[in-house]
Length: 302
Image (cartoon, rainbow, N blue to C red; front, side, top):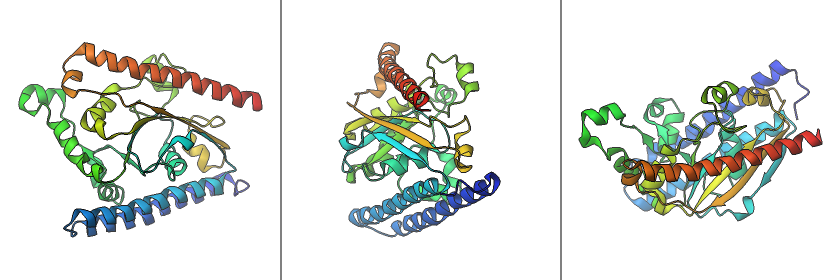
């Protein structure tokens, strides 16, 4: 543990280690993706994808090792025993900081298939990161705006067809896709601007998860409801971690049945859409209660 190192030095060191880890493992994944272009058979491409997933496992492991190096962290995790790394999962989670992906990838690396994300198409052009995500078969989305749909109704359903086509390769090997349904990291400013009805959460956005479920819901074994808490961290959690000031990370995992979503009905019938939103709002309400209980437990132990 290097928590005794002066803050600015520790910040520089931890930042350098995170960047170096991403560069090394992202670079190896990118090389594998380029090689995969020249492999003609599905079996061959699946084999090299397994290798690249292992590189991502190493990235997740080293991120956890860096966290443990720079701070004395207590990992408080429950619910992993019900998971299976040979199943297909859709994960929904609250979103607190830029640290969340590294934390959750590290905690879940041995229990479910390595995490994949729906990404904006623009991220494809980010050096190392974009190529690495493409190599891992993460779907890049180019959502058609409502205005564009209005001008050209023939585009209706194109996004869903593109998503389904992108996800066809997931049928060949177990996959975990994570969706941060709040659409943005939590801040007090956003919470107040939204007039959120929750104490610790932003309002969940149902459209993204409904889109995912309608595109490939039949492939998922379960929906995993992840609740992530940094009970002793200030609002800027990533910065606090890099300064060695985060000492506890809490995660709870709940398995939910997979809701069936009809895309045509969801995007055309308000009543159908409201019913799904009601389900998601209830999940978020229970998550808010759970976070409150976890924060209360931390207060009592301080």
